[in-house]
Length: 345
Image (cartoon, rainbow, N blue to C red; front, top):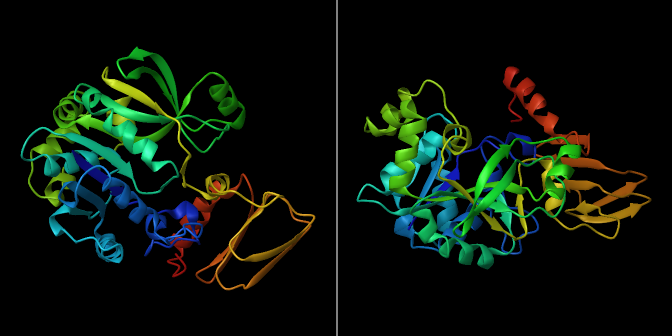
């Protein structure tokens, strides 16, 4: 079994908690008792399935040094050939396809794809489910669908079809919906689209060639990563490029405590707060306040009075305040700061 860990994202939706020089996958999440970053947790998770020689990390070339240092910090050897540094990201399909090309150069093998920005509590349950899916993955492209515990508009959804061996056919993928639609999806048995995949490399190559032939030719017809990516006019996600077209897409439900920490609203729902549902990194005094997320870097004590549904993040010389439900607009702020060539990013 080979494992691909996708670790190239910029994590701009968690700015200013994260910066371009150290995006979210490399930041230590404050509730982790071992003080591991999300990337480190993903790597240690992969080690429960295979050894270091079979684990490949796909990241931005600017983060290769971060990857190497974070591996050393968890006492893992640095295998340079297993760290793939993209000059410029082309979305998930080219990244996964190139990873499969390198990892499975010696022949067909099962491949598991892990994003590096997930919080997963019940890891052993997930690992056991993956092991039990190996036979299914030799014939299908499997995605693991998470059983929702609430309606969440931050996630994509999967409409489940008929039973298919140990999984289910996929009727339809749904992009991030409104809250009203999300409630309908949960009520009708939809699953969260986790972005975690498992497949036989031969099956995956076959389906990419069939449905994204230009990407296939660019990656498989050239040698170096730079040559491959230079032939790709526009990047595309694996969902759009393959999963929404192939007849071999299968979903395996997984009932674990899972969160994709894509933004601060998702961050808030991923962790348990106090009796008034306030989540705060520091020692906090709250008066008549509830449902707040407060993360500060320098304050020894935080006092919250009469505030509800607020996200406040102070880090890297920036104080960011917004209402819950509005944190997706941080992307607009980041774009504005990019135009200004700000050093705060």
